[in-house]
Amino acid sequence: MSNLVLRNVNKVYPNGFAAVHDFNLEIKNGEFIVFVGPSGCGKSTTLRMIAGLEEITSGDFLIEDKRVNDMSPRQRGISMIFQSYALYPNMSVYENMAFGLQLKGYDGEAIEKRVRKTAKILGLTDYLDRMPRELSGGQRQRVAVGRAIIRKVDIFLMDEPLSNLDAKQRVTMRSEITAIHRKIGATTIYVTHDQTEAMTMADRIVVMKDGRIQQVGTPKELYFDPVNLFVAGFIGEPPMNFMKGTISAGGFVAEGSSKELKLGPAYDEFVNQNSGKKVILGFRPEAVERASETTRTDGIRLDTEVSLTELLGDNTNVYAAYEGIDLIFKLDPHLTPERHTKCEVFVPFESVYLFDQETEERIK
Ligand code: ATP
Image (cartoon, rainbow, N blue to C red; front, side, top):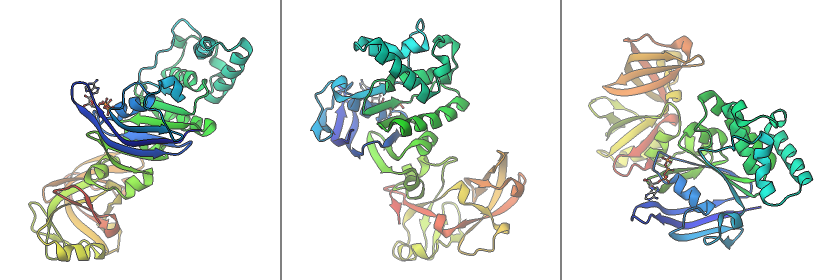
């Protein structure tokens, strides 16, 4: 099994574009790692360097302590599933899965055994005789996964494998892929721009922006303990609310407002020492309650004006403004305020984040 290490890895494309900067990561055997970030952040480039499809400009890539920078994809023992998986249209599901093993010279019996075992893992046993055109998008995707996992490899790389599926199929395949991962236990690196996929599938997430790692951590660590404004805003849906403002003598004053908001004892020392500092206050939509529903005093109260509400079933997204700043709250549907009314909300101190406006780093 494989233990992967990327050390000071950089990628500069031949046209001089630096796509990945000083990428450092250790991946443990069997981990499910997700690279996530906006389009162009360097996720695919990094994955392709790991696969051996793209040259590593500088730095080291080690598998089990062995430097593999110059090894071919095959020598690395890596299998990759791409965004646009192409099944052979004139071959049945069975033949599609068997093809790679035939090329490698396996005998018929060994192939049949492997195909059946893989089909069982993927729930494709009843579809082995079908042609790709007779399958749903999700089933085709499973065949593509089958073709990859039928080869016994230690490392799987997946580049946005669900992007061709509709929203419902994506949700199903998400849990199927994690279930397959649990069954076969191979180290997996999965690339997506979708933070929900990252949050639901990963053991650990690597958040990237502009070719640089922003933070590496479990979904819980990234959600509750983001290191900077970018990670805080990228992880979580709807995204974290942000209010620009200034540290005042006793707390925080939002831009365009004259009201001082207390930040609670955790920030006392910071507030005392940083009066006048430009900061950004953040809190998650789901941390918010209607002020009328709580007797708590250890939090911020905001007088807001509701502009729009969206009932989603289990909760309502409430769009509101505080002193002209647009915010979004996730509230209990039974406690949803009416549009164009005033609504006082409560944000507990423990749910308040602060960021430095200049560096965008989190202030703790
Ligand atoms: P997406 O989600 O859109 O696929 P990504 O995070 O996977 O984005 P990459 O494909 O790794 O991004 O690309 C990173 C950056 O490198 C982008 O700005 C891209 O334009 C650039 N890039 C990619 N391939 C090349 C190339 N062959 N030559 C020059 N620049 C490239």
